[in-house]
Image 1 (cartoon, one colour):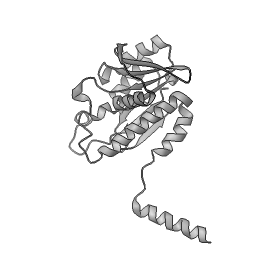
Image 2 (cartoon, helix red, strand yellow):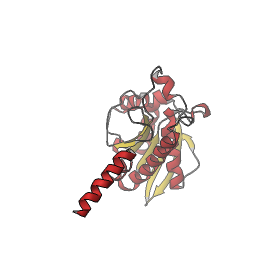
Image 3 (cartoon, helix red, strand yellow):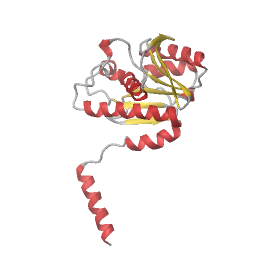
Image 4 (spheres, rainbow, N blue to C red):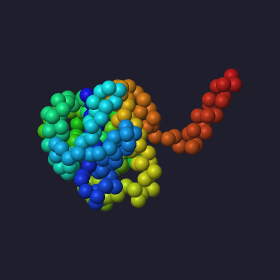
Length: 211
């Protein structure tokens, strides 16, 4: 059995904030899987289904970000899940907007949701899909940045693409596990090369082909 968990804050006022891209990735994964009908359980919202004969669970903690670990512990106890059975979607200020990175495990960094999860479960062994939102611009406090809206920025299309890519990676994780998913989707999430560099590499490739 495997699970996908999206981190965010409950309530419509937070829906399109940077801190809630994890919720949005989970919603997109549910759409790809054909799941609907959230139920309130374990201090959050749950959807259950089957994929390839295996039971799957999608979960959003409703505890607010800094208490995400409380909901995660209840989910894990009920379904008897180990950390490695769960892929977590979260925002990441250390990644540029529009990038998505998968990791097999790791620490919390500055992320309050991850800090709560690691403290409550005493484990860093959670696979995660990190969705880049970029660092706060000069003059911005971290809290204000993550609670601001991403959809009004010049980078909105990139963030939307990263959310979609994370969702597809989530479905892959449910089917094939984290290692194969990392091999497939970390490559797909490489940043685009500047046009000048692309042109130079294309020219160099042409020169080699002619020799």
